[in-house]
Length: 145
Image (cartoon, rainbow, N blue to C red):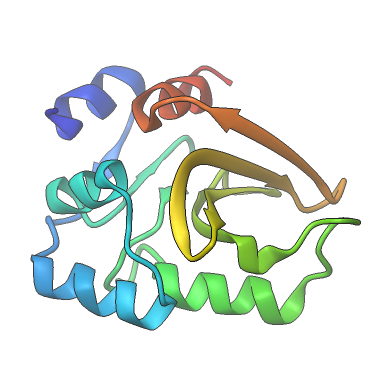
């Protein structure tokens, strides 16, 4: 899939970061103790995250930049500084982006493996929604919201 074309067609004023080499992807996976699924790995090979919709970090970077935060630091911050919703465990998600306000999203983790279920956490309402759809369709939904 051509992620750049797909995302450029969906988001106005999108800013991409340079692609990430596999060594950096593996470094982040090791730090997060998870192997990214095929879609997320493919996205990072095309771009190290991107900004859109009023400079929201729709997809965080693997490598921290001046303009974008990194996936490892963000997940650590969420785990250490937020109370998870009732009957939900943050360690069951690897977050990879946000809407620039109060909604964060990530992939569900079951038995140490990243599934294809995307979890959306509204921090202000402290609520969770699940989406079982391809990542490109999730980004399409985000772009239209």
